[in-house]
Length: 146
Image (cartoon, rainbow, N blue to C red; front, side, top):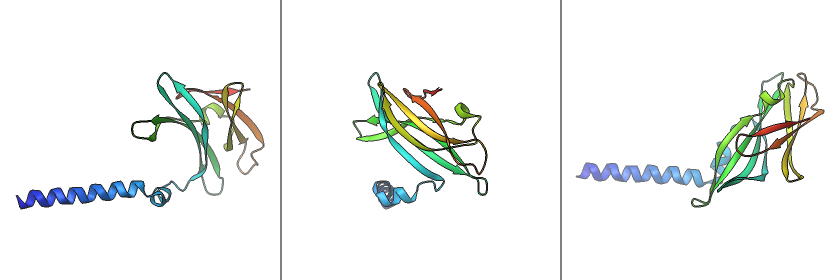
């Protein structure tokens, strides 16, 4: 009986500690992947009763020949839990395969559609001077604009 009580107490302590660590903003920021160099959040999507916002994440790869990759995430609102969950993610590299590196994302609302603008470089060590535009849709849907 004493053994069961000790195990229960230990479990409660570990559970309370992990919940506390998740809620501490400083610890959440410290846990971020250091290759994440830019994050842009905004816009709005809705499909039936599901809705949320977009998050665009830029990761840096490499050391001497640095490459930036852009990912779009669809954050779904969980109104009961009062939090956002990642519903879907997409790497833009397959939609921009002729470009070496993508960076500097921005979101804008144009004619009722959310547009993602990113800058692109064709070769390593080049400046990101080209502009690529994508129409963001419901989770998992991105359309390149020409």
